Amino acid sequence: MIRWQAEAVWEAMSPVLPGFTVEVLPEIDSTNTELMRRARTGQTEPVLLLAERQTAGRGRLGRPWASDVGASLTLSLGLPLAPTDWSGLSLAVGVALAESLHPDVRIKWPNDLWLHERKLAGILIETAGTGTVAAPRFVVVGVGINITARPAQGLSTPPAWLQELLPDVDAPQALAQVALPLVQAMRAFEANGFSAFHDRFKARDALAGRIVVLSDGVQGQALGVGSDGALLVHTASGMKQVTSSEVSVRPLGMGA
Image (cartoon, rainbow, N blue to C red; front, side, top):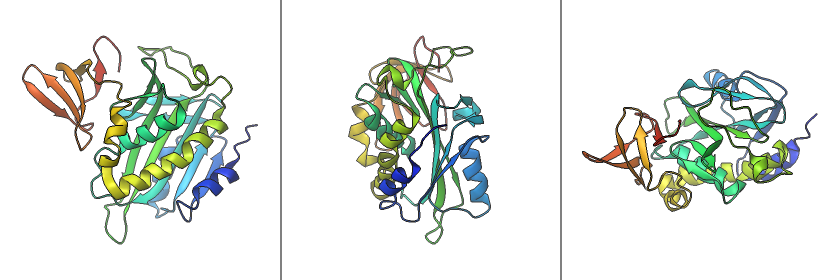
């Protein structure tokens, strides 16, 4: 049985997020899916939902994310949010997570954390509602972090795991490291947008200066991100601004 110390997490986060709750479930299909279900029924109070095991976890573009008890930290943070511009939110989340985990963790645009050229964690952001002054959109930030070694079957590149860097860390300790910085990042993004994170992202940018291949086959050199979080890629036909809704990106010769 995992001792999550949920009360300590709640005590740390509730001053920043009034009305906040922490829920721990032994098993669920997907923490993101559950919070989106709740949002559609009007349940939009701030919540951190943890699952010891996900049976149908999802990543970007619908890719599956498997999680077994203790092997990963899988959580979703849901809260009403009303930023002026939503651009770059996944990068802001990536900055908060990378900075709170370890200096060696890098951010692969637009929503992965990398360790030594391998995927350590993924971020999935979804929203519900149209967003008004009276009723801000409800955003769900899903995070999956590998804690222990994971099998590499079916993956083009073997995954990384946090115990490579921190041999004694477990899922509850990883939660204690990332929970408050994640909420603080969401508040800072709401107030100031991606501009508050641009330089911090630059310091962790895993693709900067590298030759990358876009999912449409175009190659070019990644030259950081713009003020809105769009990836800047210098191609044979000139500079291209890539948004996460358009294409995925991978370094030349590597899997996505």
